[in-house]
Length: 475
Ligand code: ATP
Ligand code: AMO
Image (tube, rainbow, N blue to C red):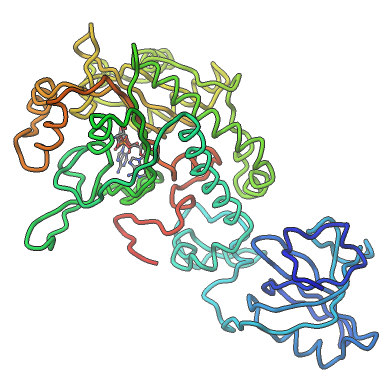
């Protein structure tokens, strides 16, 4: 009777004696002689039946076992049975466990701040505490995040983070197969890479000030200048943006890549398209069970549409035109100085889904005015740049561009954006381009957003194990 994982249990175990180590999800006393325990392991559940009939189980044992607090860990040995269909259904392909022995391994508190079962439905839209209905308390996202260790135990959260892990692994696989190398670059840095206001300062760096990296942007490019040719990184990204939205965090996981190209930055754009298509289609193929589990709460999880398994490629100007045709006021954007607002992005996502039947698309050739200083200008239209954003369901998941690879041109671009290239912290970056650097391009994806928008989750925090935002530093 070896210990078996609930996720591995199947019909071939019928009539065998097995042992499982699980939590008690709930227990129900039918009579002094009969009780049912729902056992749970990593989101999987099975019903355990305790019947005081033979020699194994006594009435005292039933009394004792059903008094064990919910969520406690138990070690249970029993006989796997196909149950009488008249009895309550268990979730593992109609198997149940006839208990012979049960030991308590680790006891849960009697009064937990919330129960896992209370998190087995989507959080309400409002953050108003204390609501309930016939099914029980309605637990807000805030309370769930405050008690994340309990919240994590639901099958939906187990599935979300299986998928999140898979995205990192698939990204890594694809990059390595393409001959790229993985790096971990410094997170204590001397300068803001993506704009001054959004950077966290570390004031006690041995008598100096340092910053938390806003992206590995400079290092990706310096490695290219160091003949690395293709690099990638998966690491933390810090943004001091006081953005309290459904998709902004102050710390998120960046999937960054950078590579040289031979003729045109569209080689890298195509690479990024293929990379993301690979991730999405592999998730749809190999993680269908997890997607179906998430779909119980978030109906859109299973309907991510990727037409012909490729990205729809449009220019930024096409996006503006589509919005205009739909009657959206784009007068601010028409001067090519203001980016699309979140609302416009979402609306464009709707238009594109209706018109082109896809949830995955790219906008290329963004206005130079809305892109960071390291972005390469368009060769013929000075208002534009060789840069692109990727969208899933109308929300940005990736930004990227061809980069300036000439020190003089970079200094000029920095000055034009109000950045002093001679400031400490920028010098090493600019100097990297003084000894020659091949033309290159890259991009940065937000892991949390990919998971959020692929699965159609309402909030990026649901795709983040321990989210950080302007209001939240715990748990
Ligand atoms: P990036 O990754 O380039 O920063 P992003 O998706 O994080 O992109 P921003 O570039 O910061 O978003 O902004 C994109 C859009 O999101 C902007 O048009 C901006 O209006 C909107 N946005 C940013 N912060 C907020 C906020 N706090 N509330 C509402 N909308 C916001
Ligand atoms: P950008 O600033 O657009 O680009 O960031 C890249 C991607 O990171 C995600 N993201 C966020 N996710 C959660 N919370 C946030 N506050 C947040 N901000 C951004 C988004 C976004 O597309 N250096 C460039 C990338 C490059 O050009 O290579 C950069 O950082 O998914």
